[in-house]
Length: 369
Image (cartoon, rainbow, N blue to C red; front, side, top):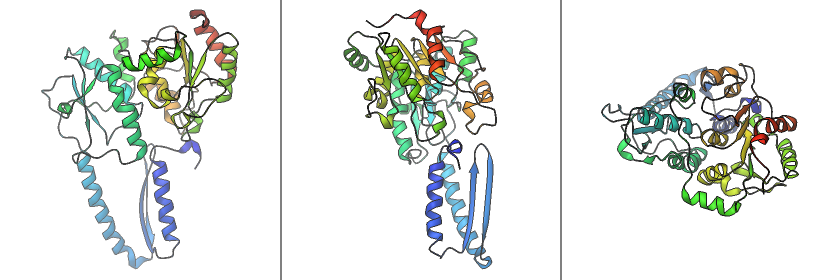
């Protein structure tokens, strides 16, 4: 399996198979039944071994099926209360992404609240299954919930409220409906960092507005990562023109230095990250979760998109996904973006970055003092 084929949950599957293989190599496993799901919707099943162990294995499969059935029932949300207004919404933690995909969901919920005239603030409950503890079993999901999803509420002025557990839940985590509403003339909410985060960033910058570059440097889906060499070269180019450049590194590399200043707190705290972006002269980066924040800020920004064929393993990089799920045509822009907020439809090489800066940002900003 190549890096391009890694998907959510793949690491856990590989780990389970390796543990099972290690047990089988001890020489005592005589029969195996297995089911696997391959993205986007392919299923694979296998059973086989010494024939007289089929019945015993089938009994274990029945027990497994009963346990899975109970888990499925635990994850089914209770019926929604139709009497609750649009200010009360609920997020299905076990069945939904715990990532920056929460941001479009949250923006859409806030726009719906405003559209229907429901009172502020937006009140969000988090559903953890009927047992009340489902959905955070993996450390990565728990970290994203604690560090990204829950703190994101404050950025739109929403509050957490268990009284909304029977509120609305919309199973859509992309920008498609936000685009449609914006085209119809609805204003798109802007994010706002807390006063404390804004004050911390202001104290650090001391009146200088930096160019902020977000790097993606993750081990999963490395094909989505930033061209770090090109971005450092671009930062050198900007520095020679008197600009202050600050990098926000991937969370896992927050404390590692670069040849330009970094802001580790922004890598691990979404409130600080948003405050830094909001204080920037401009933000630049490649398509990744944190880089969606500037979509909902009033700052110049450039986001580089390298579109792939529709049969590419990672679907969000394809023109079909962008069109059908994001409401974004190749070469186009979101309808609420300013002229200096652009998707750049090119890989993030040095010359493409410089050309985009000269065309869209430089005419609108002046060099840092």
